[in-house]
Length: 367
Image (cartoon, rainbow, N blue to C red; front, side, top):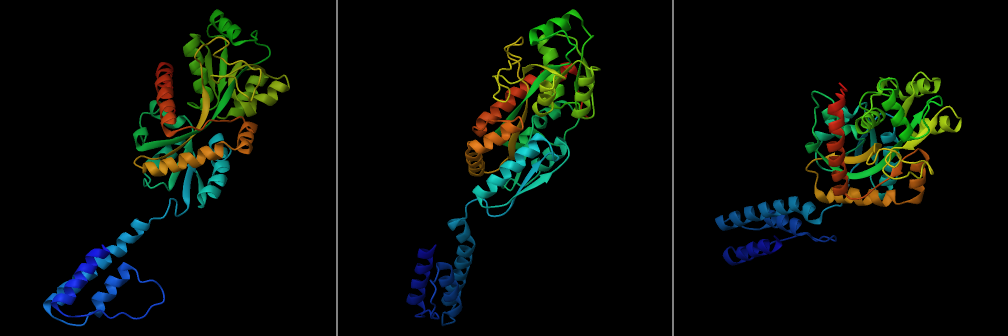
C-alpha cells in the first residue's frame, strides 16, 4: 500500500510540480499518517492535484482500517463468558476451577454465567457470536436432550466441541438387604424375580437414570424405575430400604458405603477407577461393554475460527496436565480426560449412537 502512495506522490511531482510539506514530529510517521497529511498539505489546486490528493486520502484511510488486521492482536482481547449449569454440580465445579487457571493463562477474565437446565444453556451458546468469547461447559445431557424432548431450541450442529474435560464414574450400590454381592448376582436375581426389584434416580434423563436404563437394556432385566426430584431424596430411600438399587455419584455413595449403609458392587467406567481402587467395573463383572459416566466438556458456537478452538484446546490440555488440578478433581470424584477436539467429537457421536437407542427403548421423556 505504501509503494502505491509513493508512486502517486511521484505523479504529483511530475505533473503539478507540487511538493508536500510536513510538520516536524518526534514520533515515527506511519504510512497512514504520511498519506493523510500529504493530501491535506499539498500546495496547488489543478485538476490532477485534486484527483491525486483524493486518491491519497482514500488510500490513507484504507490503510488506517487495515493496520489493526495486519498487525493483529492475539486472542483474547476482552473478557470471556463461560456458560454452565447451576452452582453446586459437576459442570459448575469444573467451570470455576478451570476458569481461574484459564484467566491466568489467557490474560483475560473468564466470567462464569450459571443457568438452570441444559436446554437454556445450549440455546444461549448456539445463538452466540462465533468469536471465541462465549464458551460453554456442560454434560452429556446436552447432546442427549434432543432425544428426550419433542422440541429442543438448539441442535448439536450449532455447537463445536473443544475438549472432553472430565468423566465422573457412578457407583452401582444396593441396600445391604439385597441378596447380591456382585453385578453378576444382581443380574441373576433380577432375572429370577422380574419386576420385584426397583432402582432410584434423581431427575428424569440425568446420568443416574440413563445408567439404570442402560443396565436394564444390556442385561435384559425388568427393574422398576423410581424417579425422585433430587439425588439426596433418592439416596435416602435406598438407605431406608424402600428402594433396593441405585447408580449413585461418588460423593453421595462413598460415605454411605464406608458407614455400611449401602453396598458398592461396581463402578460404571470402562476401566477401573483410581477414585475407587479395588472396585470392579460393571463391564468386567457381568456386562461386557457397559459404560455410563457423568461427563463435562467445553463447547463453542459452530463456525468459531479453528485457530481459536485450537488455542482453547491447547491451553486447557496444559491445565488438565497439572498434578494439583488432577488431585482437586479426583477429590470430588471426577477423572480428567483431555485430548483433541476431534477425539471429543468422536466420543459424543459414539455415546449418542449408544444412548439414543436406550432412550428410545425406554421411552424416556424429560419435557
